[in-house]
Amino acid sequence: MGQPRLAIKQDMPRVLELIQELATFEKEADAVEVTLTDLEQDGFGPHPKFTCFVIEAEGKVEGIALVYPRYSTWKGGILHLEDLIVSENSRGLGLGTQLLNAVVSYGQQLGVKRVSWEVLDWNDPAIAFYESKGADVKRDWNVVHLDENGIKNYLEQL
Image (cartoon, rainbow, N blue to C red; front, side, top):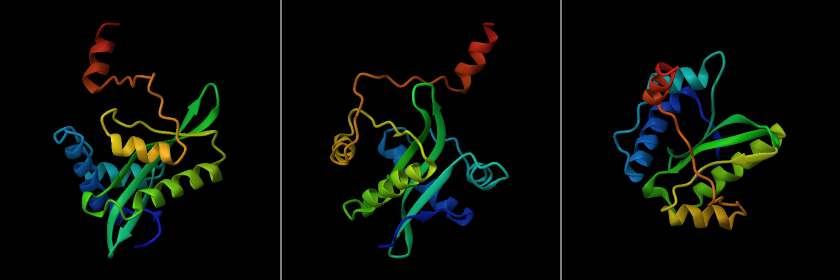
């Protein structure tokens, strides 16, 4: 088992596989719209939109943590953890802890005031994991999304 490292463009096919695995686990298998080209361009183009950490087990990428900067009007700079994914067959090996360690260390290096992310309310193992690391799971907040169709419909009503 290796240490987390920054992903390279060549990791993106496996990253996409893990994204799809997570979507299936979260009962949203058909929701993944991002493509390999998107990941390669958005992560490794002239203005990267995200940073991705990967971790290998037995020579294969078995976990990822994808992050990007945000800004809080109350706190200032924030690092948002979009997804922390460990392949189902590699769970329990400590890969998630190592990835979260890398993300928190990266956030500290950036000087952010907070690292934030969401977790599904029915994902009890993930909630227990995050709380065991000292995270405060905000159960009184709702996540709000305006998807592509929602954006289009919103703007048509202006």
